Length: 336
Image (tube, rainbow, N blue to C red; front, side, top):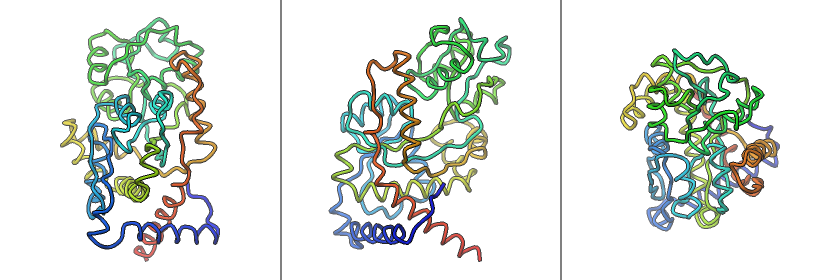
């Protein structure tokens, strides 16, 4: 996904790298001058990722993690300025922007996997297609990526959201009411998709390319202004961590299961079928998120128009690209 690099752009990358090194310095005194970075952590996901990949070593500033059970309260914390940065799916990020917070996406990672998001029914359910959901109950999290998947899948099948009944719950509760018959389908995401299918549930075919499956790292405008050096370093560390887990699915699964309590086989199945890829912030990404916002507005889930173009900071593209190219060069030399 890397764009061609011109000599001018290469020079800019070198300059950015030099400036970043200078901003951190090589001494303890320089490290102490940097403010802590407050990172919103959804069920320990970022912390585990960075820790197992070794990216929490030799950090020249303190990282303080705050735990959140789901994307909605994480977005609220970002809007309130209680944290500096956190990861959200595209649909939850639209809600966070709609709440009026001064937020900017500073990096994007594409999650390429088979069951990253899915509509699930019980194995004994008579429902065979999305069209069969008319008049049925779909459980998901309000404003979640699962909610957005359900809306898109219904639309593709010629149905409106008014043709079904939504039940909004957390994933742990959603699985329970699907199993006991209080819901007919569950719109959810990994690893819950894998947990459910390994227990005999079925995935409903819902058409290709309904979702971007992007993970957005969003920061407050204040953090971008006051903690730019920390954020520059953090996005590069996160990208390196994602590249590491692409080639170390077993080690990552072992670390995840210690936190989630899910069987290691569940996480391993997800990791082996998922690749994390760097995505640059560009017009196509912004257009895609605007489409998400427009669909939510049309469905009455958002009560106002949200212009998402204000919610991106493409200035972080260059340092991420430079770091990836440097890593690729190092890997190429090591392979010789």
